[in-house]
Amino acid sequence: TTTGNVTVVSNNFAINSALNAKNVTLRADSVTDTIGVGSGAGTFSVTDLELDRINASGIVTIGDATNTGGININGLSQDEPLTFVTGGDIVINNVITTISNSLTFTGNVVLGNNVSIDTTNAGAAAGANVTFNNALNGTTDYAQNLTLTAGNGNIFFNAAVGSGKKLGTLLINSANNV
Figure 1 (tube, rainbow, N blue to C red):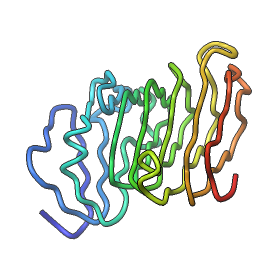
Figure 2: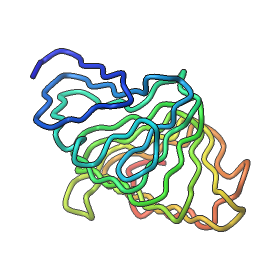
Figure 3: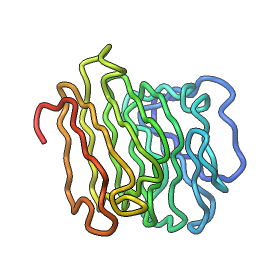
């Protein structure tokens, strides 16, 4: 337990009890390792339950810009602001939900399936920002749909959408600004 910043660099770790910190960074031991989040596959993996045990007053960052192995996210429901960073692809395969906490993706995002990203916890919370800092693409042209719900938060597309593989449908249920 700490009120400072915590960085975990490993491929074999477990968060078995509360981790209190200002900012938490979780990254793989090798820059070529894949990072699995939720039930996503990866050499370095962090489960939804392990993320539940983190109490950060700042941001939880998963990965770093030197990682070329990429991040594989498969189902996630969190109450912390999350930032995903990689020099590879961030593949999202399922629903990501937060309770009025921001989501930031820094790395090319690829939808592996139809994906829903919701920062309002299905309308139970006010919402928060969703930011895509790099390209956002599907896996196959017109085959993957993306639904975004930011409530009172903003949605930022800071790079091209569908410039590689086009999305099927991009549905924005709510946002303050896009």
